Length: 112
Image (cartoon, rainbow, N blue to C red; front, side, top):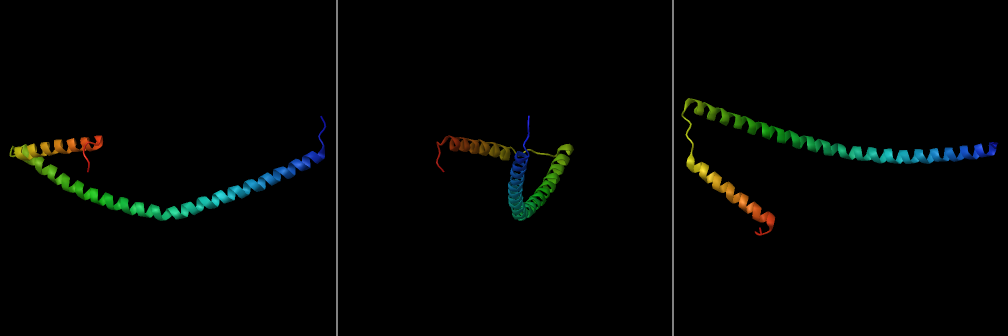
């Protein structure tokens, strides 16, 4: 098999042209990516602030809940815990009503 040197030169020129095109495409993609990253930086800060506020709210609620649970535990252990049967029955009926309304809304039977 014979290889002609003019074929090698043309092939080399084509390859270098492809490399230039590839480099241009890579540069454009990198530029767009860095623009998106720069634009997204402020979004990350906003999300971080939101998560921070949410976390502090949940911690406050958790502390309050822990206090209530400790008080209930202490009254139960001492035998002084009294169940409010009226409050329990109202909560049960309310839960059933809400569940029925949600069921009807999801089936389209009840219009809001």
